[in-house]
Length: 507
Image (cartoon, rainbow, N blue to C red; front, side):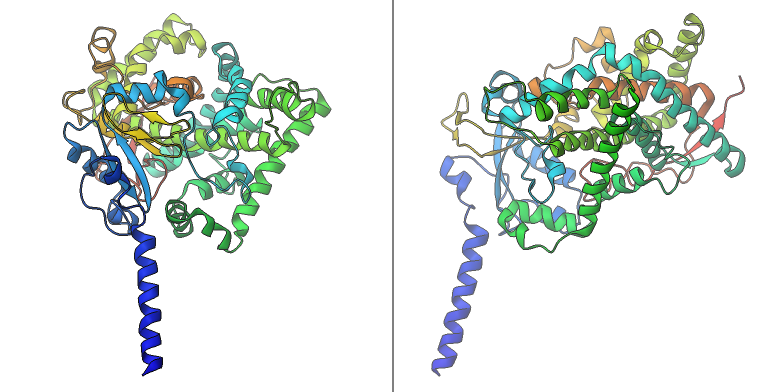
């Protein structure tokens, strides 16, 4: 009898401990006087359906956005982590721009001790972010980017040859998401690592393999994400990940070999590698300032080369995929882009240079509309770094509070963009753009943390679209997925697959 009583007592303690663990923060928003969109589930919060793989997380964010109605903000629970979702445009502008000093970090909880590649400008905040941003920014100026056009042109020439081969041998049916990923791998590999990768033609490309390993959803990555949102300290209990160690070693060796080769041979290429080498000189080899406690290691420079590669690898290829998809479904728009390309080429004697690319105004509108309708990142994340009283409310946010800005939902809100599911580049014409609701377009973020690679991404996309549309007509067919379905569990809003027909244009 006593044994039975003890077992019941032990079971009660376990059940009570689990209950407390899963509900400990469930009254967080209630105590602050912040409403929730609906009653959260224990442990899973408001994201049960996305966590079990039933829904894409963007569908959950969209539902939250719709449930908010006219409320400027609501509180949600992502697993056990409280997050404040902001809908009010003026408040978003305060967070991203006006009151940036209260929100200067993304609040992404990666463990940099187990994976030093995460110690990069995308994840860092505060002084470490400011110093590295300052060192890397000169590499993204117009004057520096124009020197990279020839490097990108080499990659697009390889892409054209590959498409020509497929058109001749396989009737022009191409799964373009994979094709654009290979192109982006070659471009960012050339500009961030100074290497000619030829991932387009090399099925065994190491950069392609490790890049895919990082961005492809996996059960392990889902478990890690869940742990980060429940109890980050538990990450230390996970068994050693050999693939992660391989990835760290691969990117470290690739970048260090590039540096050694350039130093030994006196090579000077105006690209991101050069800028990172200067950062390495100033921050690691010869620290130039004693006015800060922030120090940098050789691995920190590698980590920033790595994030340039990952950011350029997946986000640009996803946007190019969606742009070609929309152009295939909208032949009138496609023809107008092609006519602009041909006209500007005639004016520019066929030269693909900075002047030619700058004059592609309608193509720029197409890219902007693609990013409005299909932003690679559906949300922006920030964290409170200094206590902040929300203007016009009695709510004061404490340090560490997670902030979510649902940019995809904002960019699909009919209040700001009429017929938001329609692909209409005219929204961004010179005549119409001034009439758009201000501060409702965030594919590159805004404020001091505006995406550093914005100009480079636009340059890469313009070159790709110019050469593809000059040589091929893009058409949908029975394998084309309408509407697009997105990969559940992917960090980037990447479509599952996009099959299109490429038809040669006789010139």
